[in-house]
Image (tube, rainbow, N blue to C red):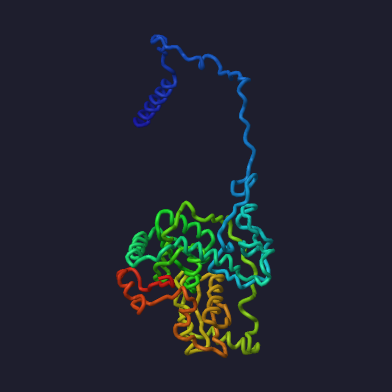
Length: 407
């Protein structure tokens, strides 16, 4: 009973406090001569609009600047080569058999004064170009003269060593060449790097590294620079003595990736020279052969072609494990092996590349693969020609030296 009485008293006190707090205290504002503002006494009225001031009209909708070309002329570029999405992973000699979608320019509508054929934007009007599709000799000569004028005299061993060491220290400032190879927009990135440095470091990974020779040729040909150093997939590209960033070439950017055209099938139903039963038996036997190697995703595949050639000296079938790699990627690898080894593609089933050396296989002679092009000769370190110059670069810089015909 005593506890109930105490609780009742507490409740009454709390209710009195709440009731007293709700009653406002007497106002003493007049004692301090407080005058309330007009906004409290009178309702707020909208001011009358001034007829002399005109209301700003909302501008009409306009499409993005990349697509709005009203009043602008198409961009013109004097680069003496055909514009392609990828220069390393597209072979101009192979013609497609069709297009997946209607032709449209990846540079945007009316942004470039070149016609997009569905594969490339040729430097010469395709209606004037010869039927055979041969490379225009005038463009090749123009490209060669421009490159020689920018490069100037060859670098000395000391100058080369300084440039290579600078690029090796600044590893964050590099360009990554990936699965699409040397793309058109990458040319603009290289020239942007050349604004602040004489040489740029390029790291190559993925499908293009199967043919590093082609990567080096296309880099020097399309950029006009010179490769000073190569170590596996790492390249150092020099801009030239007389390079002027203010007079860099006009490179129109591709706004989107064009659809790949339709090419002939890589794997035939029946291999040439074999019957249907022999083809089926060879595919079963090829999938049962021990794997030569397992390719890593986005790895360096520069030693793949010599490995396949050496394996063909022992066995006629070679299997390469490509699990975890995109289907389009290992198909491109198989196409490169077919042209470089050379060999015959058997199957791509179960994420495997199976190749056959053929009936009339002849081993490649020593040095034939390295000396196919006069201007590009890869020399192993401490060789007869490049040992002295390589040793001056230091032990931690390179295990391969790169030699060109102008040295």
